[in-house]
Image (cartoon, rainbow, N blue to C red; front, side):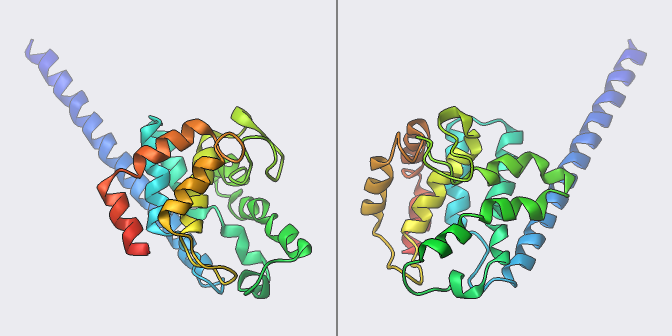
Length: 221
């Protein structure tokens, strides 16, 4: 009995040690990704770093939809790096003070592919490639770059689409004023089933009831 207890104790100690090592590795990976984002931030005329609100909403939706820990981690990484490809675009387009021309918009539409080209050689980031590539797909198939629709679009990409659109609407851009919170919510709800996954919208509306999210939104306004 004593030997059995000692064996169990040793196995438990190994398991705890492995768990700590895994956690440390995840922290190192996240730190590296944030460092990459910081480097990208120095290469763009406007702040590249995603707003905390965008990240919190995306992860909040993921938790509401009961994503597992691996999917939540990939969603986190993708949220940080989703617009990395913008570093390849001319400053004049990113800082333009009025509406983009058709040609300029076509250039902007290439950013998911450009983002993928930046991260594709980093093995730890391969799982987030489909998320980043398809976060501008629309639920009805009218989005880009592939025109995927419904559940053809990765769930994390559908989540990012909603979080990205909402946070963008309530943020001032060089070419437009920000939208008030109520109007932004109405716009997102209006596009359920066309631009956005209705299930994701349902989860999004629940997330907006979180006090911490409400505080972040008010702070940003």
